[in-house]
Length: 442
Picture 1 (cartoon, rainbow, N blue to C red):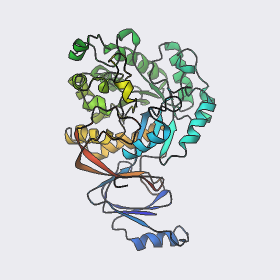
Picture 2: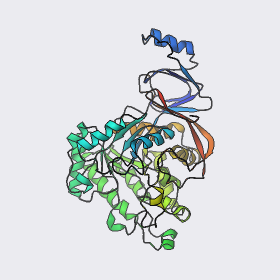
Picture 3: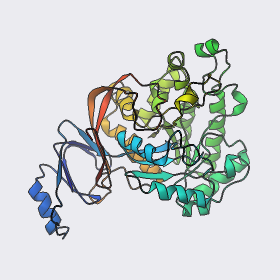
Picture 4: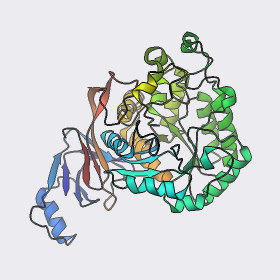
Protein backbone atom coordinates (compact mmCIF):
# COMPACT_ATOMS: atom_id res chain seq x y z
CA UNK A 1 0.00 0.00 0.00
CA UNK A 2 1.21 3.48 -0.87
CA UNK A 3 -0.05 6.86 0.31
CA UNK A 4 1.15 9.85 -1.68
CA UNK A 5 0.67 13.10 0.21
CA UNK A 6 1.14 16.80 -0.62
CA UNK A 7 1.57 16.31 -4.36
CA UNK A 8 0.02 18.30 -7.21
CA UNK A 9 -2.07 15.93 -9.30
CA UNK A 10 -2.36 16.53 -13.06
CA UNK A 11 -4.84 14.22 -14.78
CA UNK A 12 -6.29 15.46 -18.09
CA UNK A 13 -8.99 12.77 -18.14
CA UNK A 14 -10.36 13.80 -14.76
CA UNK A 15 -9.70 17.48 -15.39
CA UNK A 16 -7.69 17.70 -12.17
CA UNK A 17 -4.79 20.15 -11.86
CA UNK A 18 -4.54 20.82 -8.15
CA UNK A 19 -3.17 19.43 -4.87
CA UNK A 20 -4.51 15.95 -4.20
CA UNK A 21 -3.47 12.93 -2.16
CA UNK A 22 -3.56 9.43 -3.62
CA UNK A 23 -3.96 6.09 -1.88
CA UNK A 24 -2.97 2.89 -3.65
CA UNK A 25 -4.12 -0.42 -2.26
CA UNK A 26 -2.62 -3.34 -4.18
CA UNK A 27 -2.45 -2.61 -7.94
CA UNK A 28 -5.11 0.06 -8.46
CA UNK A 29 -5.85 3.60 -7.40
CA UNK A 30 -8.18 3.40 -4.39
CA UNK A 31 -8.68 7.00 -3.26
CA UNK A 32 -8.14 10.50 -4.61
CA UNK A 33 -8.78 13.00 -1.87
CA UNK A 34 -7.37 16.08 -0.25
CA UNK A 35 -5.67 15.67 3.12
CA UNK A 36 -5.71 11.87 3.24
CA UNK A 37 -4.41 10.43 6.51
CA UNK A 38 -2.85 7.07 7.20
CA UNK A 39 -5.75 6.16 9.48
CA UNK A 40 -8.24 6.97 6.73
CA UNK A 41 -6.40 4.68 4.32
CA UNK A 42 -6.29 1.80 6.81
CA UNK A 43 -9.99 2.25 7.52
CA UNK A 44 -10.73 2.23 3.78
CA UNK A 45 -8.92 -1.08 3.37
CA UNK A 46 -10.77 -2.67 6.27
CA UNK A 47 -14.25 -1.23 5.76
CA UNK A 48 -14.59 -0.59 2.03
CA UNK A 49 -12.30 -3.16 0.48
CA UNK A 50 -13.08 -5.76 3.14
CA UNK A 51 -9.45 -6.81 3.38
CA UNK A 52 -7.65 -7.99 6.47
CA UNK A 53 -4.23 -6.49 6.99
CA UNK A 54 -1.72 -9.23 7.61
CA UNK A 55 1.06 -8.66 10.16
CA UNK A 56 3.95 -6.72 8.71
CA UNK A 57 1.94 -5.44 5.80
CA UNK A 58 2.67 -1.76 6.16
CA UNK A 59 1.80 1.47 4.45
CA UNK A 60 4.50 3.32 2.51
CA UNK A 61 4.05 7.08 2.73
CA UNK A 62 5.60 9.30 0.06
CA UNK A 63 5.85 13.03 0.68
CA UNK A 64 5.31 14.60 -2.75
CA UNK A 65 5.75 18.22 -1.70
CA UNK A 66 6.73 20.34 -4.74
CA UNK A 67 6.18 17.35 -7.04
CA UNK A 68 3.82 16.80 -9.94
CA UNK A 69 1.92 13.52 -9.70
CA UNK A 70 0.60 12.29 -13.04
CA UNK A 71 -0.43 9.15 -14.90
CA UNK A 72 2.68 7.20 -15.90
CA UNK A 73 4.06 8.06 -19.31
CA UNK A 74 3.32 5.81 -22.30
CA UNK A 75 5.85 5.48 -25.11
CA UNK A 76 4.45 3.94 -28.28
CA UNK A 77 7.80 3.73 -30.08
CA UNK A 78 10.80 2.02 -28.47
CA UNK A 79 13.47 -0.35 -29.73
CA UNK A 80 14.58 -2.82 -27.07
CA UNK A 81 16.62 -4.80 -29.65
CA UNK A 82 15.28 -8.08 -28.33
CA UNK A 83 15.54 -10.65 -29.84
CA UNK A 84 18.69 -10.53 -31.92
CA UNK A 85 20.60 -7.40 -30.91
CA UNK A 86 20.82 -7.65 -27.15
CA UNK A 87 24.36 -6.27 -27.03
CA UNK A 88 22.63 -2.89 -27.55
CA UNK A 89 19.60 -3.36 -25.26
CA UNK A 90 17.30 -6.08 -24.01
CA UNK A 91 13.83 -6.16 -22.55
CA UNK A 92 15.11 -5.85 -18.98
CA UNK A 93 17.51 -2.94 -19.46
CA UNK A 94 15.00 -1.22 -21.72
CA UNK A 95 12.35 -1.51 -19.01
CA UNK A 96 14.78 -0.10 -16.44
CA UNK A 97 15.48 2.88 -18.71
CA UNK A 98 11.77 3.42 -19.23
CA UNK A 99 11.03 3.41 -15.51
CA UNK A 100 13.87 5.87 -14.88
CA UNK A 101 12.25 8.18 -17.42
CA UNK A 102 8.80 8.02 -15.81
CA UNK A 103 7.34 5.50 -18.27
CA UNK A 104 5.02 2.81 -16.99
CA UNK A 105 4.00 1.44 -20.40
CA UNK A 106 5.99 1.08 -23.61
CA UNK A 107 5.41 -0.51 -27.00
CA UNK A 108 8.35 -2.24 -28.67
CA UNK A 109 8.95 -2.03 -32.38
CA UNK A 110 9.24 -5.15 -34.51
CA UNK A 111 12.55 -4.74 -36.38
CA UNK A 112 14.24 -7.49 -34.42
CA UNK A 113 16.00 -10.70 -35.47
CA UNK A 114 13.92 -12.67 -36.08
CA UNK A 115 11.39 -9.96 -36.81
CA UNK A 116 8.05 -10.05 -35.02
CA UNK A 117 6.14 -11.47 -37.95
CA UNK A 118 4.94 -14.71 -36.35
CA UNK A 119 2.80 -15.46 -33.27
CA UNK A 120 5.51 -17.73 -31.86
CA UNK A 121 8.26 -15.10 -31.81
CA UNK A 122 5.88 -12.46 -30.50
CA UNK A 123 4.54 -14.66 -27.71
CA UNK A 124 8.04 -15.58 -26.57
CA UNK A 125 9.05 -11.92 -26.35
CA UNK A 126 5.88 -10.89 -24.52
CA UNK A 127 6.25 -13.74 -22.03
CA UNK A 128 9.67 -12.40 -21.06
CA UNK A 129 8.42 -8.83 -21.08
CA UNK A 130 5.66 -9.76 -18.66
CA UNK A 131 8.25 -10.27 -15.92
CA UNK A 132 9.32 -6.62 -15.89
CA UNK A 133 8.30 -3.99 -13.34
CA UNK A 134 6.57 -1.86 -15.98
CA UNK A 135 4.14 -2.84 -18.75
CA UNK A 136 5.99 -3.82 -21.92
CA UNK A 137 3.89 -4.35 -25.06
CA UNK A 138 4.84 -4.90 -28.70
CA UNK A 139 3.79 -4.21 -32.24
CA UNK A 140 4.10 -6.91 -34.88
CA UNK A 141 5.20 -6.54 -38.48
CA UNK A 142 2.98 -5.41 -41.32
CA UNK A 143 4.89 -7.51 -43.84
CA UNK A 144 6.73 -10.82 -43.56
CA UNK A 145 10.39 -10.31 -42.79
CA UNK A 146 9.83 -6.55 -43.24
CA UNK A 147 10.35 -7.20 -46.95
CA UNK A 148 7.36 -5.15 -48.02
CA UNK A 149 5.99 -7.88 -50.29
CA UNK A 150 3.53 -10.04 -48.35
CA UNK A 151 1.28 -9.20 -45.41
CA UNK A 152 1.60 -11.05 -42.13
CA UNK A 153 -1.36 -12.80 -40.50
CA UNK A 154 -2.92 -9.85 -38.66
CA UNK A 155 -5.59 -11.95 -36.96
CA UNK A 156 -3.09 -14.43 -35.53
CA UNK A 157 -0.72 -11.67 -34.44
CA UNK A 158 -3.46 -9.78 -32.65
CA UNK A 159 -4.46 -12.98 -30.87
CA UNK A 160 -0.81 -13.41 -29.85
CA UNK A 161 -0.80 -9.97 -28.22
CA UNK A 162 0.19 -7.46 -30.90
CA UNK A 163 -0.99 -3.94 -30.02
CA UNK A 164 -0.36 -2.55 -33.48
CA UNK A 165 1.44 -3.17 -36.75
CA UNK A 166 4.61 -1.59 -38.11
CA UNK A 167 7.66 -2.17 -40.28
CA UNK A 168 9.41 0.71 -38.53
CA UNK A 169 12.87 1.24 -39.92
CA UNK A 170 11.67 0.62 -43.46
CA UNK A 171 8.91 2.17 -45.59
CA UNK A 172 6.20 0.15 -47.31
CA UNK A 173 6.72 1.10 -50.94
CA UNK A 174 3.92 -0.88 -52.60
CA UNK A 175 0.86 1.35 -52.47
CA UNK A 176 -1.66 -1.42 -53.13
CA UNK A 177 -0.17 -3.59 -50.39
CA UNK A 178 -0.31 -0.77 -47.87
CA UNK A 179 -3.89 0.04 -48.82
CA UNK A 180 -4.87 -3.56 -48.16
CA UNK A 181 -2.96 -3.53 -44.87
CA UNK A 182 -4.70 -0.39 -43.67
CA UNK A 183 -8.13 -1.80 -44.39
CA UNK A 184 -7.45 -5.17 -42.72
CA UNK A 185 -5.75 -3.61 -39.68
CA UNK A 186 -8.50 -1.06 -39.10
CA UNK A 187 -11.13 -3.81 -39.24
CA UNK A 188 -9.24 -5.38 -36.31
CA UNK A 189 -8.83 -1.99 -34.51
CA UNK A 190 -5.06 -2.25 -34.91
CA UNK A 191 -3.14 0.97 -35.58
CA UNK A 192 -0.58 0.90 -38.39
CA UNK A 193 2.53 2.98 -37.66
CA UNK A 194 4.69 3.97 -40.61
CA UNK A 195 8.31 4.99 -41.06
CA UNK A 196 8.01 7.40 -43.97
CA UNK A 197 11.26 7.67 -45.94
CA UNK A 198 11.36 6.97 -49.67
CA UNK A 199 14.88 5.66 -50.45
CA UNK A 200 14.70 7.27 -53.90
CA UNK A 201 15.37 10.62 -52.19
CA UNK A 202 18.15 9.41 -49.90
CA UNK A 203 21.82 9.24 -50.81
CA UNK A 204 23.08 8.79 -47.24
CA UNK A 205 20.56 8.39 -44.38
CA UNK A 206 20.65 10.23 -41.08
CA UNK A 207 21.69 13.69 -42.25
CA UNK A 208 19.55 16.46 -43.73
CA UNK A 209 20.43 17.16 -47.35
CA UNK A 210 22.14 20.45 -48.10
CA UNK A 211 23.30 21.49 -44.65
CA UNK A 212 26.76 22.49 -43.49
CA UNK A 213 27.42 19.09 -41.97
CA UNK A 214 26.84 17.49 -45.38
CA UNK A 215 29.51 19.74 -46.85
CA UNK A 216 31.96 18.98 -44.05
CA UNK A 217 31.40 15.22 -44.29
CA UNK A 218 31.30 15.24 -48.10
CA UNK A 219 27.79 13.80 -48.21
CA UNK A 220 24.55 14.41 -50.07
CA UNK A 221 22.21 13.31 -47.29
CA UNK A 222 18.47 12.64 -47.09
CA UNK A 223 16.19 15.07 -48.88
CA UNK A 224 13.03 16.19 -47.10
CA UNK A 225 10.94 14.90 -50.02
CA UNK A 226 11.74 11.38 -48.83
CA UNK A 227 9.32 11.98 -45.97
CA UNK A 228 6.89 14.43 -47.56
CA UNK A 229 6.13 12.30 -50.63
CA UNK A 230 5.32 9.16 -48.66
CA UNK A 231 3.31 10.94 -46.00
CA UNK A 232 1.17 12.62 -48.64
CA UNK A 233 0.52 9.28 -50.36
CA UNK A 234 -0.28 7.39 -47.18
CA UNK A 235 -2.53 9.87 -45.42
CA UNK A 236 -4.61 10.02 -48.60
CA UNK A 237 -4.86 6.21 -48.57
CA UNK A 238 -5.91 6.26 -44.93
CA UNK A 239 -8.50 8.98 -45.51
CA UNK A 240 -10.40 6.84 -48.02
CA UNK A 241 -11.52 4.35 -45.40
CA UNK A 242 -10.88 6.31 -42.20
CA UNK A 243 -8.03 3.91 -41.44
CA UNK A 244 -6.14 4.04 -38.14
CA UNK A 245 -2.75 5.40 -39.17
CA UNK A 246 0.13 6.84 -37.16
CA UNK A 247 2.92 8.76 -38.89
CA UNK A 248 6.09 8.14 -36.95
CA UNK A 249 8.83 10.63 -35.94
CA UNK A 250 7.76 13.65 -38.02
CA UNK A 251 10.73 15.74 -39.14
CA UNK A 252 9.45 18.25 -41.74
CA UNK A 253 7.29 21.36 -41.64
CA UNK A 254 5.51 20.20 -44.80
CA UNK A 255 4.55 16.96 -43.06
CA UNK A 256 3.00 18.91 -40.19
CA UNK A 257 1.04 21.00 -42.70
CA UNK A 258 -0.26 17.89 -44.48
CA UNK A 259 -1.27 16.28 -41.20
CA UNK A 260 -3.12 19.39 -40.10
CA UNK A 261 -5.12 19.32 -43.32
CA UNK A 262 -5.90 15.61 -43.37
CA UNK A 263 -6.73 15.24 -39.68
CA UNK A 264 -9.89 17.20 -40.51
CA UNK A 265 -10.80 14.45 -42.99
CA UNK A 266 -9.73 11.44 -40.93
CA UNK A 267 -10.08 11.47 -37.14
CA UNK A 268 -8.11 8.21 -37.04
CA UNK A 269 -4.95 9.92 -38.27
CA UNK A 270 -2.24 10.33 -35.64
CA UNK A 271 1.37 11.47 -35.56
CA UNK A 272 4.44 11.39 -33.33
CA UNK A 273 6.75 14.21 -32.33
CA UNK A 274 10.07 13.00 -30.94
CA UNK A 275 12.08 14.94 -28.34
CA UNK A 276 15.16 15.05 -30.55
CA UNK A 277 13.26 16.45 -33.52
CA UNK A 278 11.61 19.19 -31.47
CA UNK A 279 14.74 20.01 -29.45
CA UNK A 280 17.61 19.97 -31.95
CA UNK A 281 18.51 21.36 -35.37
CA UNK A 282 20.82 20.01 -38.02
CA UNK A 283 23.79 22.00 -36.66
CA UNK A 284 24.02 19.49 -33.82
CA UNK A 285 25.71 17.05 -36.21
CA UNK A 286 28.71 19.37 -36.43
CA UNK A 287 29.13 19.10 -32.66
CA UNK A 288 27.95 15.57 -31.86
CA UNK A 289 28.57 13.72 -35.12
CA UNK A 290 27.10 10.21 -35.26
CA UNK A 291 25.43 10.61 -31.84
CA UNK A 292 22.98 12.91 -33.64
CA UNK A 293 22.56 10.65 -36.67
CA UNK A 294 18.92 9.52 -36.78
CA UNK A 295 16.32 8.47 -39.36
CA UNK A 296 14.61 10.65 -40.43
CA UNK A 297 17.34 13.24 -39.90
CA UNK A 298 17.22 16.25 -37.63
CA UNK A 299 16.43 19.20 -39.88
CA UNK A 300 16.13 23.00 -39.70
CA UNK A 301 14.89 25.48 -37.11
CA UNK A 302 11.82 26.07 -39.27
CA UNK A 303 11.05 22.36 -39.12
CA UNK A 304 11.65 22.24 -35.37
CA UNK A 305 9.29 25.13 -34.75
CA UNK A 306 6.63 23.53 -36.95
CA UNK A 307 6.83 20.31 -34.91
CA UNK A 308 6.51 22.27 -31.66
CA UNK A 309 3.50 24.13 -33.04
CA UNK A 310 1.97 20.84 -34.18
CA UNK A 311 2.32 19.38 -30.70
CA UNK A 312 0.82 22.49 -29.12
CA UNK A 313 -2.23 22.59 -31.40
CA UNK A 314 -2.86 18.83 -31.47
CA UNK A 315 -1.80 18.16 -35.06
CA UNK A 316 0.86 15.89 -33.60
CA UNK A 317 -0.92 14.12 -30.76
CA UNK A 318 1.81 11.84 -29.38
CA UNK A 319 5.26 12.34 -27.95
CA UNK A 320 7.27 9.18 -28.68
CA UNK A 321 10.98 8.74 -28.05
CA UNK A 322 12.04 6.34 -30.83
CA UNK A 323 14.47 5.05 -28.20
CA UNK A 324 17.14 3.42 -30.38
CA UNK A 325 20.18 2.03 -28.54
CA UNK A 326 23.49 1.27 -30.27
CA UNK A 327 26.86 0.24 -28.87
CA UNK A 328 29.64 2.76 -28.41
CA UNK A 329 31.71 0.94 -30.99
CA UNK A 330 29.01 1.23 -33.62
CA UNK A 331 28.64 4.96 -33.06
CA UNK A 332 32.42 5.45 -33.28
CA UNK A 333 32.48 4.34 -36.90
CA UNK A 334 32.60 6.77 -39.83
CA UNK A 335 29.44 8.76 -40.44
CA UNK A 336 28.29 6.53 -43.28
CA UNK A 337 29.26 3.37 -41.38
CA UNK A 338 27.56 4.22 -38.09
CA UNK A 339 23.91 3.21 -37.53
CA UNK A 340 21.17 5.80 -37.06
CA UNK A 341 19.37 6.30 -33.77
CA UNK A 342 19.73 7.60 -30.23
CA UNK A 343 18.40 6.62 -26.83
CA UNK A 344 15.63 8.82 -25.48
CA UNK A 345 13.60 7.37 -22.62
CA UNK A 346 15.63 9.00 -19.84
CA UNK A 347 15.68 12.52 -21.31
CA UNK A 348 12.21 12.81 -22.89
CA UNK A 349 10.42 14.52 -20.01
CA UNK A 350 13.21 17.04 -19.52
CA UNK A 351 13.26 18.03 -23.20
CA UNK A 352 9.47 18.31 -23.31
CA UNK A 353 9.45 20.51 -20.21
CA UNK A 354 12.15 22.75 -21.63
CA UNK A 355 10.84 23.17 -25.17
CA UNK A 356 7.07 22.86 -24.74
CA UNK A 357 6.25 23.96 -21.20
CA UNK A 358 8.95 26.53 -20.42
CA UNK A 359 9.42 28.02 -23.88
CA UNK A 360 5.99 27.58 -25.48
CA UNK A 361 3.81 27.81 -22.40
CA UNK A 362 2.10 24.47 -22.95
CA UNK A 363 0.09 23.58 -19.82
CA UNK A 364 1.32 20.55 -17.92
CA UNK A 365 -2.08 18.93 -18.42
CA UNK A 366 -1.59 19.17 -22.21
CA UNK A 367 1.89 17.67 -21.89
CA UNK A 368 0.55 14.75 -19.86
CA UNK A 369 -2.06 14.21 -22.55
CA UNK A 370 0.70 13.99 -25.19
CA UNK A 371 2.92 11.71 -23.12
CA UNK A 372 0.34 9.49 -21.46
CA UNK A 373 -3.36 9.80 -22.24
CA UNK A 374 -3.26 10.05 -26.04
CA UNK A 375 -0.73 7.22 -26.54
CA UNK A 376 -2.73 4.97 -24.22
CA UNK A 377 -5.96 5.73 -26.05
CA UNK A 378 -4.52 5.09 -29.51
CA UNK A 379 -3.27 1.62 -28.59
CA UNK A 380 -6.08 0.71 -26.21
CA UNK A 381 -3.88 0.45 -23.15
CA UNK A 382 -5.22 0.56 -19.58
CA UNK A 383 -3.30 3.72 -18.76
CA UNK A 384 -3.40 7.50 -19.09
CA UNK A 385 -5.52 8.37 -16.04
CA UNK A 386 -5.51 7.93 -12.27
CA UNK A 387 -9.25 7.77 -11.73
CA UNK A 388 -10.16 5.43 -8.85
CA UNK A 389 -10.16 1.83 -9.97
CA UNK A 390 -7.61 2.41 -12.73
CA UNK A 391 -4.16 0.77 -12.69
CA UNK A 392 -1.83 2.43 -10.21
CA UNK A 393 0.66 3.53 -12.86
CA UNK A 394 2.03 6.96 -12.06
CA UNK A 395 5.05 9.23 -12.10
CA UNK A 396 6.21 11.80 -9.57
CA UNK A 397 8.56 14.49 -10.83
CA UNK A 398 9.91 17.93 -10.03
CA UNK A 399 9.12 20.07 -13.09
CA UNK A 400 11.62 22.86 -12.49
CA UNK A 401 14.60 21.36 -10.70
CA UNK A 402 17.52 21.06 -13.11
CA UNK A 403 20.03 18.32 -13.68
CA UNK A 404 23.08 17.68 -15.80
CA UNK A 405 22.46 14.72 -18.08
CA UNK A 406 24.89 12.07 -16.91
CA UNK A 407 26.74 9.69 -19.27
CA UNK A 408 25.50 6.88 -17.03
CA UNK A 409 22.09 5.62 -18.09
CA UNK A 410 19.87 2.76 -16.98
CA UNK A 411 19.82 1.75 -20.64
CA UNK A 412 22.53 -0.65 -21.74
CA UNK A 413 23.63 1.96 -24.30
CA UNK A 414 24.74 5.58 -23.94
CA UNK A 415 24.30 6.98 -27.46
CA UNK A 416 22.76 10.34 -26.59
CA UNK A 417 23.74 13.83 -27.82
CA UNK A 418 22.22 15.33 -24.67
CA UNK A 419 24.95 14.14 -22.28
CA UNK A 420 26.34 17.13 -20.38
CA UNK A 421 23.36 19.38 -21.07
CA UNK A 422 21.55 21.12 -18.21
CA UNK A 423 17.84 20.29 -18.39
CA UNK A 424 14.79 20.75 -16.16
CA UNK A 425 12.75 17.91 -14.76
CA UNK A 426 13.80 15.27 -12.23
CA UNK A 427 11.94 11.98 -11.85
CA UNK A 428 11.51 11.13 -8.17
CA UNK A 429 9.39 7.97 -8.41
CA UNK A 430 7.82 5.76 -11.04
CA UNK A 431 5.10 3.44 -9.75
CA UNK A 432 3.66 0.64 -11.89
CA UNK A 433 0.85 -1.67 -10.77
CA UNK A 434 1.11 -0.17 -7.29
CA UNK A 435 4.80 -0.97 -6.84
CA UNK A 436 7.77 1.34 -6.98
CA UNK A 437 9.56 0.61 -10.28
CA UNK A 438 12.03 3.49 -9.93
CA UNK A 439 13.14 5.69 -7.06
CA UNK A 440 15.66 8.48 -7.50
CA UNK A 441 17.40 7.55 -4.24
CA UNK A 442 17.34 3.78 -4.67
